[in-house]
Image (cartoon, rainbow, N blue to C red; front, top):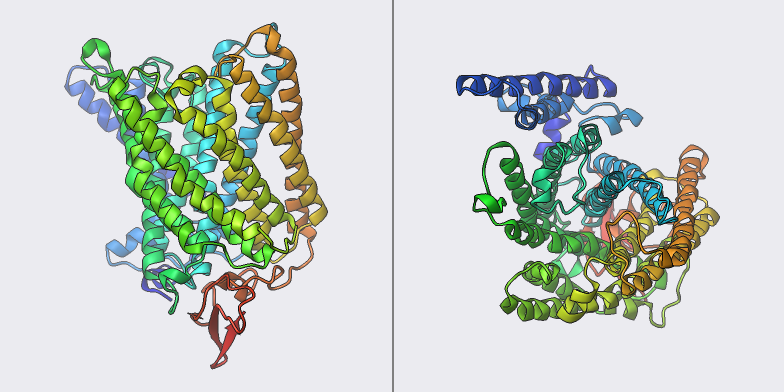
Length: 626
């Protein structure tokens, strides 16, 4: 066991149940919130102000509450005690309760992320159903304009959170150490900390609705975000916290992939999904702080009298968009690249072919990393930026499609002439390729200045964005869940239910979002609670297909619940795959492998005579990993 892992799995036996850890976290959060808000009250009184100002007092109190929550939920017993030379508490229970504790096992943390964000995804989907119910009738809408904007804003940020963290935090945490032959992440306790930053984010977003919510969308553009209800202040704190989790996770993945690969796993033998997480982690590490900085400036304008974005006081509202999009366009690749990594990981195993243009696909990932910070202003063609910036950002946006195209062509080349095995993971992978193609083609129109000016803020943008993120990453997420579910649980799901889920989702998704391109071309604005009555017929079709899309996830939930309760045991390697994660038990033991594996070949050399990916010592001998 590596040093940090061993430290957290030795020491004093734990006497706390899983619910006691969470209860203590909540208790210390309340106490530390009071301490933080109380300290600010004293300072305000001493400076001649009233003791309480909701947004300022809540912001300072929240900093204390976040520290109290993390220490109370387990960071103190399993980490901070060591700073004072005291023994840390041992790893907690080994049954289901471990999923509710501050554990350092990367597999448990991966499940924690996945379970959390599947719930968030379903909640966001319910809000989407409410939005489509609103769009059934433009004359007698279900919601008033203010309520609709708050619902739309909540749906947007929840879905963005799912897109940013579900694959990286969930699938990545569980699978990356297994794929590279490591026994855990490089910093296990930091990994646990990254996850336990997430529950306060959810609490703040839900609690914000009690203080008026926010109606500025997930982008939170100033100056609107500086003038609306106090729920916006809670949103700002939530996203800053979420950004911290993303940064710490990215740092951990980079260290893990660089330093903990199995012996013999050179950079040219790394599985492609690991490459996608590696590049994604660099993007998250380099750019996430800019979104946090933008929201911090908004928060300071609201509570501290600064004027970063207040034009009347010398501020620059357009500055917000520059800082925001400097992160938020690279964030598209934080969402998309792991999805491509999953698809490229699955295709060779289900086509029984080597991954086509493996090195060129990696070059595509690295090209996106190098260029992702130079395209942000194409989101601002109508925002009033200098005309001298239009042509350069048009060019950089078009050029970045070249490395993206390399990744896409790698997928197509792997499928070509392959003997496709159309099991559920492969169906979702193929669906991702089809959907992302539409998202990529329509993105060209939004990259060019003349067409972007005409299509900006219409449903054309809504359709394009959903084809890129839902049609791309979320389809890939379900491909990953169906592919690695037997590894994570040791059980095999019902394939008929999985296929029903795929076909309903695929038909419902395209039936929902393809017509939105037409709506956008005919002038229907996004983020508006109603629309011209002549567009009602198409909107009714879109809503009906949206309900079909929503119903598809009922089959997914039913399948997962039934499988966890009564599903048959899965074979050790049900897909006959070559990569390391399938060469250990399902679920894997604590250390992942009985002995550290040794990699001797490429992970995708299907059809190559006598090719072996790796060997692992078992009982004093080496056993080949096919």
